[in-house]
Image (cartoon, rainbow, N blue to C red):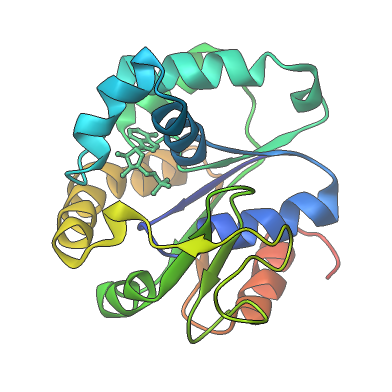
Length: 212
Ligand code: AMP
């Protein structure tokens, strides 16, 4: 299956994508994770992207479209994939269509702005393996290191409150119109994302027609 997760930053796309990835045995491709890795490694693309991510702005379309084009050409994507955080603009969605990618479902995780702000202030991430936790809703076993690889957990710089506000603004203005784009194609499924992680996973799998 070729699946897209849409939703505001902090709506739980990464967490749900990880569950569905494991259940269906297909990779998750997160443009945000690829960009963060490029920033960490100090590549030219990373240096360019940092200017945008630190302000909560979107990285230019041509950069992320290039990232996705290369990644989808990898052999592990042949049996299906999940896109987490791409597309985020109508031109990105059009570029995906132009690549001849047939999509099975676009899942929009619905979470209020209020809940997003609370979630992002408590989000902790593992820089080593990319796992994501929340101090209240999904704590790691000891609260400070990653359950999966033992590395120290950190707070993403773009989860700072003022950056979260601008990311939410960008989401509503630029990314939310994609719901309409995919609704018109008949593949949009809205999933309530405000409840517990496992409840949202059950709703997500059912929206995909997969047994939980
Ligand atoms: P995320 O981890 O998905 O929240 O992405 C973190 C940051 O990476 C975003 O705030 C953007 O600056 C950038 N980014 C990730 N995906 C995209 C995309 N599809 N288009 C533009 N910028 C992106």
